[in-house]
Length: 140
Length: 298
Image 1 (cartoon, rainbow over the protein chains, first blue to last red):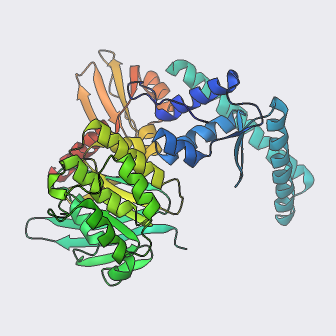
Image 2 (image 1 turned 180 degrees about the vertical axis):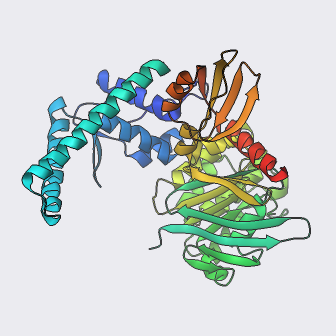
Image 3 (image 1 turned 30 degrees about the vertical axis):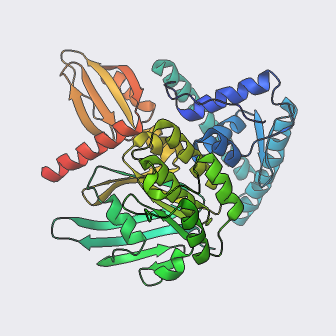
């Protein structure tokens, strides 16, 4: 059977973090193989008897970390290799960049103006991350 | 298809000693909502209005796209309802009840009902009057589940159950949710059950909804902060503080709008943050009720 994860009521951590940790472990030891399908969010929620929204949260964070890949309507798989995760993100990026170019044209911006807007966004991200890192350091 | 299985808008009901006041509620299809409230908070009245058993004085109630109470007969074909005060017929057996319900509801799933008998460890030939409380609850739940209703409405389904029966019931509720077209609304004052299986949580107190959100948001935003102030330091003003306790030098705050940035705000203001504690749903509920009641009495 797919899932033999255990949710502990006495573990102080939120349930979604417990789920994330155990999935990471399953993958690390090879119980859940790279590229293979993992239980859907609903399936796992049913077997663990925890709410769908909790499992969804765990899957979303795992996906952000590049550990699993969720394809709309197709369920989730363990990221087959570090490359595939980034390939999928690259496709996603290409789509969004096309859209940015279209919207820029719609607004009558020059290519240079569009580029500088993208630059502003990446700068913003960097400063956000720096403040967040500082905060988490102080917080821990 | 309607995305909302339950929709309340501005619903009021006035009794001589109790008022359900301007209730608005949305329950998306495919999710499970826990309704939490103290005894007498209005949970059962809300559920009775939803079922068309009590008619609201004001406001719109839509269940599975049907207007209640006007279209209740049609809506009820697809609703499974179990409440504490629902009585099964004592001298009759569970098998008799099963064939009775089956004769009324064409969607009755015989195979599923037999599986539920095994999972709930019930014997069809047993008479209802010989069943324990827990067995009766499970029997009533079986009769509702085997109809495969699109909406399950359960008033205190786990009250009075032993730990084994409770886990059986919670497991079976989650199994229903494996099908994303099905929806569950249940009331409880056991916050542990609600915390475990709910997607959406609604707190109700003194006839009003005091908070309604998805569970992860509740658990994410509520924090208890333990601070240490310097002798001349003031308590920094933080967003969403609903409760201030502790002593002057060692204040304890509860906020419902926690953000990690708060920690540096406190430090800048000369208040050292000793601990940031996550809160259980029970603590969140109690803090919520207290802060609302205080505001009401001011």
